[in-house]
Image 1 (cartoon, rainbow, N blue to C red):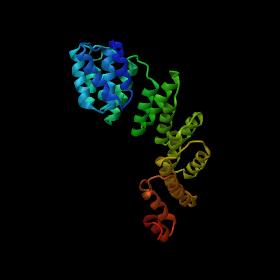
Image 2 (cartoon, one colour):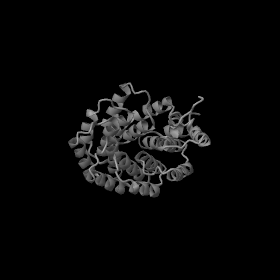
Image 3 (tube, rainbow, N blue to C red):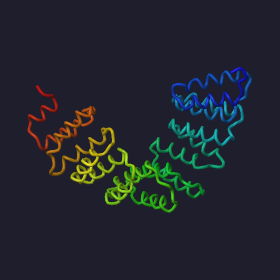
Image 4 (cartoon, helix red, strand yellow):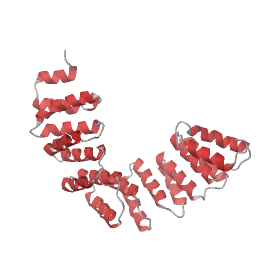
Length: 306
């Protein structure tokens, strides 16, 4: 291209920022721009910050922050939220908090980024506090906001707050998506409210493997292995392509504590057939065989057939 412009450079840098294999090329293009005496703008830096994230280069992110200040784009809201997102994704909560405080007109993207930063640093209570502050500020939470907060409730076992969040989801007429539905399901399962969890599960139209795993684990964690097994049988009839480690770990654990322990060995065969790493399950399966099988069966599992 003989007559390259800032628009053409930005278009190419933006394309590079969406592909990990080409992310580093964006920085070379920035150098070429400077060589051609072109001044970058906010769009340039927004894309380069995304490239730094793809490369997981924390140092490059800090250097970009310095460049943003140099070219006086720190008041650009898109650049601000990109820097905030970068620091949050890198787990640098101190820098993320400083950037968040600097932003004047905070939108949902900014709030979600700082809440995510607290999530990555296991600051669960702070995340719930930020959610309340977001609501008080008049910013409408998104599906992603609700999902993050509900995940925090699950980890804390805070059923009361989780129900309040669910009520707000309903009142605000947020269009629920699959990640939000799965977060609600996991929250109720984690808080031993399997009755409500079943209601949530039944309303999910396009269930994915996460939905099924959460409900199976919910039954198992609450001592209802028989229903967990029944759900697993249903799952096997679905068109979901592959079961994963979590599915097998939950259902094998479930067979330890209810009369249908005879399912244990067939499940072990399914684990091997699926090519799942047996080390993930060895303690679960050994526990099953310890309780219900002979010594020779336990030895065969551990050492293999002779």
